[in-house]
Length: 106
Image (tube, rainbow, N blue to C red):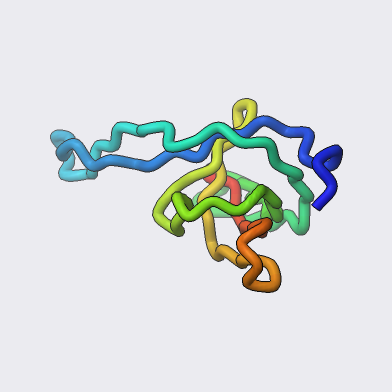
């Protein structure tokens, strides 16, 4: 892995359910698990229209150094964007790097 390509500083956060609001929706607090350098590559953008409102969702791939701390329930935060983790690949099972397939949380 070339360290120079890992130029974005991202936060790996764990959502913690702390209760429910008046409407019965879950309320979450977020705990930062780690701050790491990453490479972010955009893959595709999906646009949908619901109730006359157009929204777009970006799928990306994030490459980081291997860490056993990451799982699919966590999120990646970078700048003002939040990404949910769809899948995690331990490249060649060598515990050197991980590729996260992510979708932007809208």
